[in-house]
Image (tube, rainbow, N blue to C red; front, top):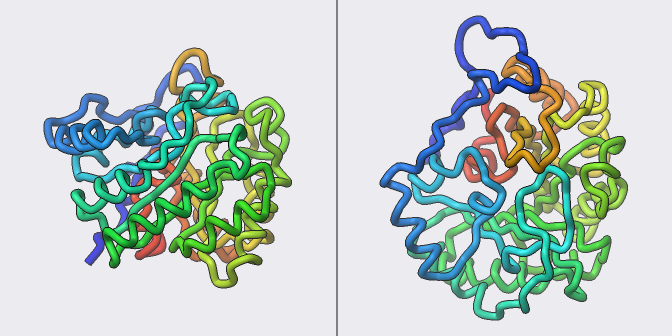
Length: 305
């Protein structure tokens, strides 16, 4: 039985949001990895695998690794795009690795995962954007773990519907594509992406595979307003998205976009209530929420109430 998601908000009266230059107590997590995380790190190195947990400097890395879960990042560790908030390296990618799907499946089987999340960086250098690798890995994982559910968190494939079809034909339990931010900020934060295109990818997923669970996520604290967040929620529902994550942007390094505001746990709860009122069936909204954090619990339990 899967345990319900924890409420990330502290109890009692919450302090007012602090200035963007100061990290509030509610946005702090212990940094050092515990010894319990070592077996997973060793396995990843043995299988020559990347995780978005490490590459994106996720604040939940220690917690997830310590309990033996990770989000596998396909297609190498060099991205063809440069987003202002992301710490994944932008560089000329290495050749596609045909052995990667099997190695991911081996690692997932050794970890005895019941829910496997596959993501990738952008590979605009590949004709299909890496869609075939997603499909091959999804099938390899299910062959190694017949009872496991697979979630794919994909790039936009530059709007290529055939590439999207290749991924969906592998029948993932969840198709995820993150909208990330509000349309006004796309040009600055995601210069090689387009807001309407990301919405269309999500809409097309439902059209190409009816009854497909579709998921998206966004970060707050990048300069958006609450009204703009509300507008994005409406757009996502109109596009057929049924599962939603909202989390606080935390600057990975000083070279990246600064934090414009820290959103209080109360505000995250209000976002969740608004999303459920719009018809989202699964909602996870909180300071440390990331698209793949507690993904199995969100899929099976629908998010905290």
